[in-house]
Length: 343
Image 1 (cartoon, rainbow, N blue to C red):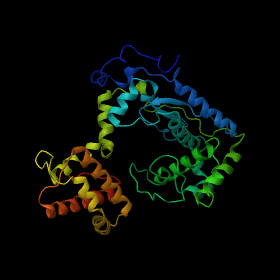
Image 2 (image 1 turned 30 degrees about the vertical axis):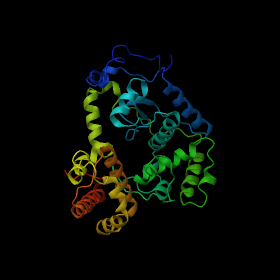
Image 3 (image 1 turned 90 degrees about the vertical axis):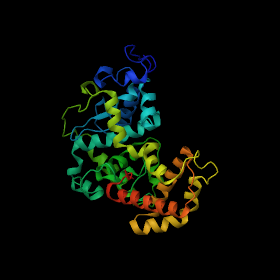
Image 4 (image 1 turned 45 degrees about the vertical axis):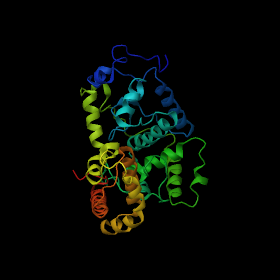
């Protein structure tokens, strides 16, 4: 049975509002007979080809993750049925792992975590010397150096920099990727030393059985009783910054609408014109990199265009409010890793 044929007439034809009222467990989703099974088998073949004696069990959960101290992989439920992908994209603006390429990148990353759990790799002194202490606190939000060559580049937002265990999972994923000449790609990078360590580590694991065989499937979709609506409300709140409307209230307070100032200067143009003068000021007083401030300014300018906002007649006051707003947003970013609105 193909992915498109794996339909559940009881809910697959429901409109979004009705579908959101269902509980996750009521979807009765299963990995079997979906295209995801084929991708999982591809992962197992890649592991076999590298002599890794371990196939991490996979199941459908509420997001991508490998359970703490359990050598398994949770795959997001919305990837198991074609009706759920458009809903995910409509609400979250993207479908993480939608294409085969992206799915395999994420699957290899989570396989790295599972390998850590199965062989308790972070307990090794050599592992900690290469990647750091696993006892370091996990953070949902983190700062990163976008041009650092001490880490591989695999998932977005320099994810390897978020935690030592993520650094290993990313390094492992790059090492495992078929037909990727990582020795050439990372030549001259400090990250190459980590890749060589993974290469040596896997040779050491050949022929050995996992020392941790714990079983479990935390947050399995069939055990989750919360409704889809609540599920997405929680996720949107957690990833609020990624919502295009995140900055709207602040921007509308600073700028004017096209209706009230039809001939006014577009707010986005003012932001771009003042970027050169705003960057050093905000960066100096917040002690944050100009890269971060520039990223924020681009987000604000894009949203101003979408809202068709204009500059009020009081240009000096507007400039002052822009500077204050930017400083507040970047200051919040310093402490939380996210741009948080002023209200």
